[in-house]
Length: 143
Image 1: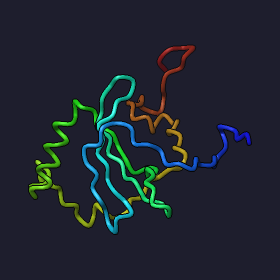
Image 2: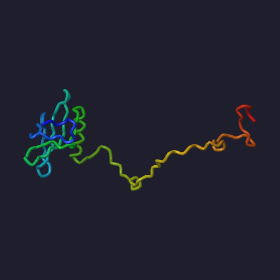
Image 3: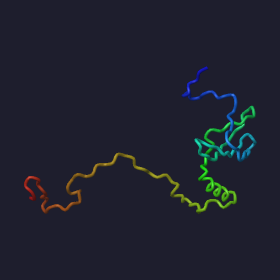
Image 4: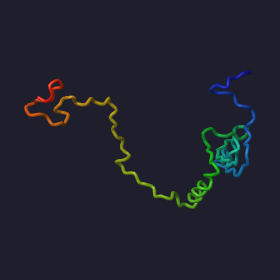
């Protein structure tokens, strides 16, 4: 049976996908239905570390969970490992966390109305006016 590649809910294959790459760690989560896999993979010749949550279906097969994964470039791996080591040791972030005040959490009014026109009257311009209300006449010069 033909199914369009643009179908919003295409049927899945019967077999779960294979986790290609070298699995570095598989950490069980919760009741054993999920696990976090750390895998060394390659895309177009560029190696990276993939972190992905896999979930067991009713037949006991593991499937990757949509929107529960990320990739780390090997150039970033040392910094990520350092941050994870600090977090595991309980040191947390290198900089102290800023405490928000109650006033910062309160919603703020944002005026989204159309901006008002500037006042066109000469006295509103802030420029000096000639005494007696006389101003500049473009045809006769100063009055």
